[in-house]
Length: 151
Image (cartoon, rainbow, N blue to C red):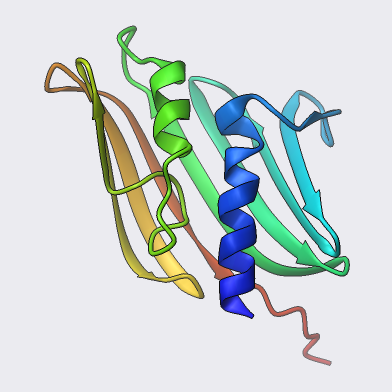
């Protein structure tokens, strides 16, 4: 089932924030929310803030949570380009479905993502450089969700 979720996640990422598609009404005060669905699968990305921010991406299968990733990041100076970040995020690999591909460059910008672990349990970070100077950083972690009560 993991391959199904990874393939769905790749399509969801290309059809939400990265392409400015799928924006939905805020689920919480002042949140930014994006949604993508196919059949029984639902993806939601919800975050707070824009220059200092935190959020979560998650997948549901038949309304049951099956995977989630939390992230927090910050813009470090005025050379940050959200359009470059969005381009980087439209390029994820199946082996690295978390954010963008491990390395993406265009013009004066370079995106680097490093991750440890596998889809079921991982952590990583990404950075954007402008002419060799870091202008953005983000930490992320997540994995499979099992909703089973202890009592």
